[in-house]
Length: 446
Ligand code: KE4
Image (cartoon, rainbow, N blue to C red):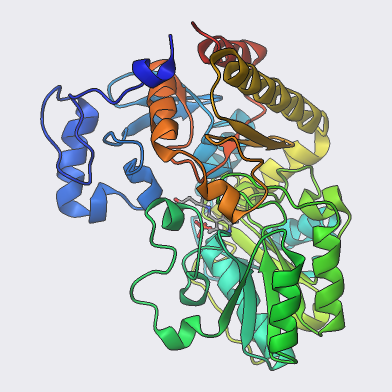
């Protein structure tokens, strides 16, 4: 069965961009209709709206291990993993037990706790470049604050980011952004004053000349260069050999702060993240997702001389009511302990990801599909193009309609992958050999 036909969006479901039509009403549909009246697009984050896959969103009832269940009782093998935090699988018993216990001691104090010391020390042990850290509540806050610290440290205003990389939704970073900004084709968001965007220079991922040119044309004006060491918000695009080392050298030469946005890759590509994987040491790093074990928690940090510019020791102001709260730190500590003390998880999830990547390639050959697979560790992406996707233009060459058909085919067969071509597929320690085999069977079905 060719999923192009099998996955064709049934007439019974109307793309949300047009209207929600009650045809085969399900509980998800009912909740969605209510949500549309309450929240923009009925969601609290745009990618959840399923806007590019031609069907209305699933409302999730609960999740456990490798599975999510929607409110209609349908079970799916989950490869979204809440966009990355779920490396241990959903509701890991030891994480839940620790969080529930912590809740009885109070949810938030707005005062320092020993747990923040524990988590900060673990982060420094596992990612030594993070000599000093500050905890915040989202990846957006982490990247926004890291850039402010870099500006305060250098006294410079401009930053460099890469087209198609996504670092959250702070004004200066919503310039040629990836993730849902790319999916919704609003890489330059409305509401961002041109004066803000002017401080953000945009280079091309894996294109050294585009970086050199910006540094040459903005001598001594660039505070920082921020990069996803593995781009995972234009689909998954790997750094070419030596590219990260090149960024390390050119930022060093120009007195600019090198920021690795490891919100996705941190503790995902191994316990030391992408900087350990590639052996390149940034000046600052941002973490999110896994570091909070599923709770709202993110971190920015790096060289002590930079971080000491942050209030109250320095003049770079940044604050947060719930930053480092005892529940999120509990979830983060337990998650990192489980990963640190069971390093074999990384071999297992990488091996399973490689198995899946091979099955996608087999599918493409078997049915003569245009498909390119990028995979590293437990991250992968199936691009619907015959180009070797190694940059933004390559990612954009993908057939997003074919992706939508693939998404619906997989969903109709009990497998939940990212509802957008420009996201990553995440494999967790909870995905069993049977789950992987079922996924392969669905991929290779006639
Ligand atoms: P949050 O503000 O969403 O916690 O993190 C922003 C962020 C920063 N840096 C990187 C590399 C990221 O991938 C993200 C957020 N990732 C997206 C998924 N690609 C979050 C999902 C969503 O926007 O709903």
